[in-house]
Structure formats: C-alpha cells, structure tokens
Amino acid sequence: MRRALFDHQVSAMQMLRASLGSGHRRPMLQAPTGFGKTLLAAAIVEGAMNKGNRVVFCVSAVSLINQTVEAFWYDGIRDVGVIQAAHPMTDWSRPVQVASVQTLQRRKLLEADVVVIDEAHNMFDFYRRWMADEDWQKVPFIGLSATPWARGLGKHFDDLIIAATTQELIDKGFLSKFRVFAPSHPDLSGVKTVAGDYDEGQLAEAMDRGTLTADIVQTWLERGEGRPTLCFGVDRAHARKLQDRFEAAGVPTGYIDANTPTDEREAIRKRFHAGEIKVVCNVGCLTTGIDWDVRCIILARPTKSEMLYVQIIGRGLRIADGKDDCLILDHSDTTLKLGFVTDIHHEALDDGKPKKSSAGDRPERDEPLPKECPKCAFLKPARVHVCPNCGFAPERQSTIECAPGELVELASKGRAKKKPEATMDEKISFYAQLKGHALNRGYAPGWAYFAYVEKFGVRPRDARFDDVKPQQPGLTVANWIRSYNIRRSMGRKFAARGAA
Ligand SMILES: [Zn+2]
Image (cartoon, protein in one colour):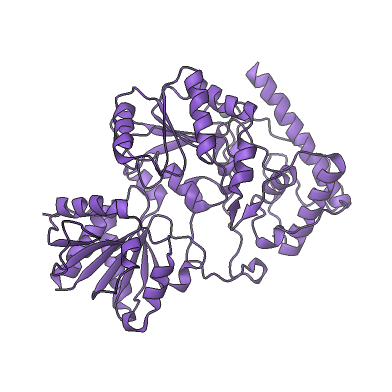
C-alpha cells in the first residue's frame, strides 16, 4: 500500500491534474529537497495505472534504476518492468517500465500513455527529440525536478508547477533550518566563465591556495562542532587535497566522487554515520548521499549555477533526530552572490531567449542579498541589523556628507530614503565607473562587484554587465565611493573593537 500523501503532495497532484486538464502536455513539477518526490512519483504512477495507462518512468543514470524500483515496490507498485540490458526484471508486458535515458536512447521507442522524466533539469538530447516527435505530441511528459531552472527548459516543457518552496518546507519542519558563515573570500578574478559557470580548471587553481585550504580546515576545527560534514571541492585533485589537509590536522576524513564503487561508498557511509569519519570530501556527489545524515556543509566550490548551489546545500537540509540546523561554512562567496538557497525562485521556466532586462520581460532578481556580520562572518538576512549569531550591531551611520546629485542619502535613523529606481543604463554606467575606480587604485578584484551590490542591493547579473568596460568615475560616483569606503572602514574598526 502506498503511504498517505502529505498536504503539499496532495496539492501538487491537484495542480498537476489541473495543468493536464487545461491542455498542457509537458508540465514540469518543481519538488525541492525534502518534498518527498519519491512518494509523489509513486502517486503519479499509481494514478496513471488506475486509469489503465502504461507509464514509462525515466531516470538520469543507470545506477538509479534499482533504487527507483525499490521505492515503487515499497509503495506497493510492484507490476514493474525494467528496460536495461540483461536486467532480471525485463518484462515489456508490465504497465510500468523504469528505464534510464542512456538505455532508452539506444532502443526503439516503446508505447506509453504517460512518460515521467525524473531529474528533468538534465535535458538530454534524447528527451528533446522524443518530446518533439510528432507521434508523441498527445502523450503527457511530466518532468520532476528540484531545480527546473536550466536554460531553455521552457522550450520543451509548457507549464511550471511549484507546489512548495524550500522555505515552506523548512517552516513546516520537513527540512532543517540552516545557518551560513562566510569565513573566507576567494579571489576569483582570473577565473573565466564558461557556459554559465566558472571554468573548472581555473577555478580549481584559484581555490587550491595554501591559505584558503588552511582556513577551510581551521574554520571547521573552530566552528564545525565536530558535526558530520560534507565538503564540496572543485575537482578530484582539489577534493583530495582537502581530504589530506583534514587528515593532517587529525580529522578522520573520507573521499568520494562519481567513480567511487558502490561498496566503498557504502562503507564510507557506515563509518560516517558511526562517527568514525567526520568529514567526507567529494566532488559533484549530488544524486548520491541523499539519505546521509549531514549536519554541516563546507562549500569550497564556488559556482554561478543556482541549480548546483541549491543541490549542494540541499544535501545538508535533511531532517534528523537531534538535528537543530545545518551549519554551512561557505568559503566560496556563493551565498553572498546568489543569496540564501531559500531566496532562489523562478516564476516561469527559462525560454532560452537572450535576457533583455531593460525591456522588462526578465527583470533582475531583486531580493536583497545577505550581509556579512563583520565580527563573526555570519550571513545575516538583508535588513537585519543586530547579528542573530553574536549579537554584534554595527553602529548606524548618522550622516554621511553627500555632494549634490548623490543618489543614496542615509536618513538620521539610518533608514535609506526611498529613491526612484535607477534605469538599467544608469546602473551599467555606475558599474563601469566602479570598475574604473578599481582599476585606478589597483583594488582587489571583485571590489566593483561588491560595491555595486552595496549600492543597488542586487547583483550585476544581467548579461549586459559582462562586457562593461572600466570608465573614469564622475563626481557622483566618486562621492558615493568615498562614503562607501568610510562606511567600510568604520565597519572594520567596529569589528576589530568588537572582537577585542
Ligand atoms: Zn555576528
């Protein structure tokens, strides 16, 4: 018998039915970590079977087939065949077929009345061709994903169903709370962006610096509370080096990557849960280790990908007995640049078109970014003044001398006055002048980026910012920079005093 559905799963089923009922044939269901996606999938399959429909359930790797079959079995769905060479459960007469995309793409398409695609943010070419095939236009393809934000996904799916957000699941107790610290800031100035994320080779080099690695280990020793910890590295060599550094500091540490054999992985999991291994360094282990009791995440892998970021943090949000929260030690600046994982929302699937934020069809995200407590490096939600972690309250600025034309003026109570929104051209010009100032003064890379964030409360994310050339700052920007630097140096002074 299938387990009973939770309210958010019932509502997901209702929204899915409504979507199909209104004519959509390619709905995408967003089910964050903690949603109970397996049970939801079982309910979808069961619903189709009850109508006499044949279902093909597609997974993104051969290694996921058996666990999917087991999960269905557990929920009473046992009339299942598997499409995989020499699999003992091969039986095409069964109403539910579980298959990996790798196996399917080598075969003739079989018949189905409903297709479910798990991890559907991975848009394999085969899926594209299959979904575009004339003969399959009336057959519903239901996508399931925790992070359906891949570029161009909206060209293949026609509806986005958001049944619950990560924040809602935390509020309801289905996911653990979390706290984020940003103990060190990497220098990513020389790292190029390739296909939307950092170039991996250059990133590994940038992150593989002695001081940074030492700080990662030191921070964990000081703040990690000995918690069972997953540490995400850039590539194998980097994750191995982190493992060596932890070991050298006397911390029993494991290592896994995509090539770790199942039995070795299982042995590490057991030792991890027994407390014999404290930290497991890994690279890209996102579909495995989902059921591990992880209470601390070390993010040593900077990313521009919201999908990767949310998947990594998701590994730590599973609830467990005696777990109050997940501690996130973010050495990658990712939280400062992308916001908390609970801030990441998209109202619609990406249509693959170039972004034209000035035209207003895809505006910059405007959730304010977290701020770092200057005393303890805790990342506070925007607008939170007193640090919830250490109680430190940066002194509010009473008056900042402003030249005429200054855009931001702090009121005496420290509240910024409401300003008319700057246009995209004004923002780009401002950013160009910040870059010019940084160039003149030889400031650290990233200075202009963070100054921009401070100024506008959002990241310079639009594609138009990528090619902005440095410009000589004019009076307005120069004055703003002066007040910004004053605020920053005061922040540091207070921080030093607070720490003393
Ligand atoms: Zn603090």
